[in-house]
Image 1 (cartoon, rainbow, N blue to C red):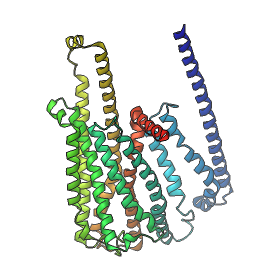
Image 2 (tube, helix red, strand yellow):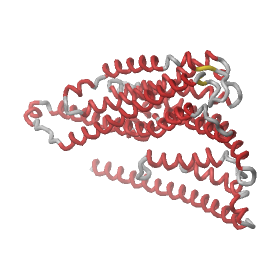
Image 3 (cartoon, rainbow, N blue to C red):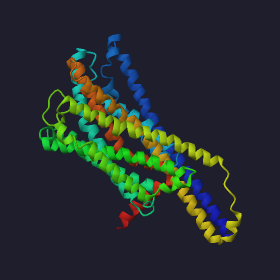
Image 4 (cartoon, rainbow, N blue to C red):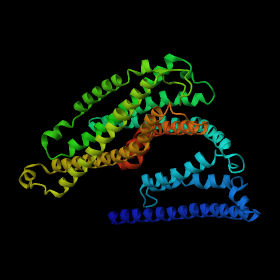
Length: 450
């Protein structure tokens, strides 16, 4: 009877929770429907008021009419990610996040700062002013956004990944050191960019600070990407059918490899202490390579050893890991009936639970690693290519508009690697499944109890 009562109670609780979820989603979608209907109404009203095709082309007053409700409705869509994370809707949180962030960036990062009278006056002059003002805005607000979320995310990553339940895993150790390197990269690289908006960037005027900032930023970024490359190789070793390869996947080897990566990264960018100089003109940044030879050396080193080489190895070993996993799934497991009969039942159950838990952790680690590799390719590759292009065309004559456009594009692409450095915690939270989220909740509970 007691068992039946407990089952009935749990069923009743589930039904009530399901009803509350339905009501909440109904209210949420109804509010957004009203908001988007209002935006449509304001748009139609504004378009009807135009007296000519020229007015329609210029869209005078449209942004002012829909700006606030559009920002509210589009930003509120971030709740879709929360719904997916907590299982209120059957969607992949990471896919939903990517869909939402692109639209929010268009509203807050593009439409919010581009002048809406661009067609009304001289296009060249206005476009030059637009590029300069947008570049300044990106340096300030977008940099602040990345700095805030990246610093918090990487600190939480370090705290979660240093918990006792993760310490013995080699892949987790590599993720943790990579998070430390990402945090150093964000602090050393973004702080001067944010201060430059208020003319307070000392690295732009002081040679020693300029050299140190460039050396620390490039070295830490190389360490972070190379450690993710090592994590990809570690996953391949662990998924191999060869027992000798699997034995190479250990915490001790991960620690040794990390130390080697740190030493190599320092040696690669030690030349920055000579090549970089402050107070330069006709360069994307005031703190930049002082000669064409220095810039080419830095650009080729960055493109080849920091970006291309790790990404190529990540792709190769990622494909090989997927191949290993498929082979293991198709292979039949050997029978161990006689061994299992000799074992105590409790010991056998404990072994199975431990093995199941580690398999689950490995599966989530592979998913986290795959998403991080994809984000690395999308957010670091463009800057590596454009750095070389900018250096090779630096002696070519360019109009002011071409030069401003190149500088704007360079400054925008410069922020993309910082965005990648800020993303790991959010990738791990969305793709790490219950294992990572449980560890995060445990961290918060322990801090609250203390």
